[in-house]
Image (cartoon, rainbow over all chains, first blue to last red; front, side, top):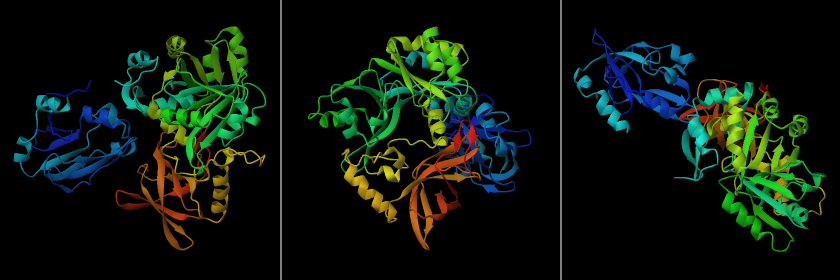
Length: 127
Length: 366
């Protein structure tokens, strides 16, 4: 059974977003996504300082069974990347919402945040 | 709802993720494919492979018929309780299926793939009319495979005294019959282990007892990474009816002598032998990618052959949990070097190795 924390926002492509006090966002992939992917073996992360566009491909996750694209939930600049995932990608399977975070983004357009789904709306998509 | 083995409830009890596999509802994994893989390499794991097809062959000409049907020679099974791995070829020398054949006290037992069941049975029936042979499928039998360094001890601890002694000393590719249980030292993982072919009604209790004794349940996902590490082919991927056994790393499974044995496909594979010597038939080889990235089935390979650029393809590819990088089986032109795999548009160099990566838990290539 997947979990859908209420304090997070989500995208239809299975990314989660936590809006921080300083206006930046932290993101990762949902519990539902890591279950669908299976054991993750490599993660390609964007570089710090890179510009990303909402809904554009930003990262690639390789699991034993398939490679999957991860999409930027908002437009902005990557300000921090979770380097631990490069050597221990399996953290995303065991802690998708905690230690398995992907990166922190400084959003360039607050309207992107309004377009995100709340937990109930995302859970419905996953049914 | 697909077909279900006698162990379906056991899979649910163990928390399996069930998927459709050739029309069967089978466990792809329980908690983690990688942990299940390590459990087999380091301790012991049990697989439900009851979806595979068991076919018993009997009759006065059972042996003659199998010497006609199969590219390997059952004449090598000089007494009951021995096993052979063989291809079953069509007249063009393509592989209809790969299988294990066991000699029994009466007749022979074949274990063929699940996905090829109907095709194989029709094929066998069509090749039987001129022989005094009976072909009987055994859907009343389940198959549990228990593999890993501790597997044989774990199984023997659960057997009756009379069964445990001969099972504990069973040699590789040997089998024994004990009542209505058939126990063989064969498998698909590259580890020591046993395959137990037993009545359906006996399967749940044996499975539960194995789990209780610490043997881990292993899904089909880990079965695939284990067999790939062991360099073992998967029918429908590494070979099929359009592929010669000589282009599928199966040359050693063809028994050419005696030359009078006219097995189905003999003339065609004799020609394939010449073609391969002339460099006109591809080979199946191993590839490793020691950098980041995963080699996957279907990816295009670019190779150098005598100064020309030629192509190959990955037939099976995955991540090796034991080696912690990607490995693959690939069909490439003979004499290839400087192979690069097209991974999402980027030509990525890979190393050619013999198609065997891990045996008894250890890396076996340089």
